[in-house]
Length: 324
Image 1 (cartoon, rainbow, N blue to C red):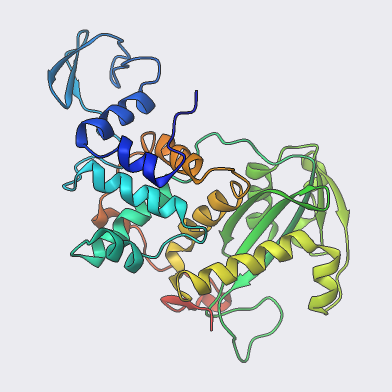
Image 2 (cartoon, one colour):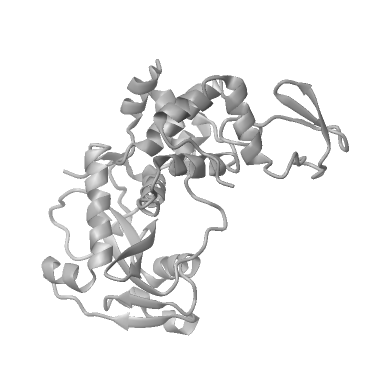
């Protein structure tokens, strides 16, 4: 049974203490009762308020161990408020906005929390798209001079798959790719779309050969007119437009390109749940995934984000994608 608050009043009433927050984490992490992460034993004794000891292997663990909340120095009440704020805002939250709302002394803390939450917005083993799917690529970045066609220096390629749902859009998937070659596009399609689905693509040769991998394909050759392209493949172009508007609005266009994949994960999480009747359900889904997501320290997130060549000729993109 899905158990989540429907209103901010109910949220404040339910999660006003550490004990209540921890009990909720326990119910989500072990919905069928305690399960030892080492021996998978089901019996444990409580040695402290926050610590369980397995009766089989004697390993001690807590509700937050092995989750994004591990080793946090802030109270769970504050984490819960952050997650409610992030999921209840239609267009998401910036690190500066989260810092102001929670009264955090450090911008870096707010930044780290948001990136930990973004890593929890991708559910492991999620279903692939199926049916009729529009697939296309777009460049995320500002205006460039002296480049033509698919060349870029300061932008990043993003490939988008949008499921057709009548005249509207169903679920979507997105990913950054170094280029638009078959070596980059085919793995995205295979990971995100069920074989047997019909792919609606343009005539770009990077999609050639997908028929041999079990996909049907309808090819529409697009003219150089952006207006014409938007009419022939409206769903992916609408998603691309909404993505860029979101990056410009919520994040003021200053997104480090090597963190862009995590922003795409957040956009996808929000877009695929845009029809939820209650914002509380987004909070519930994010909390479910947060207790199943391994912990990451601020240092490891920064250290792993090393600049990589994204453009032709081996040139490095700018540190930030400026969407001006």
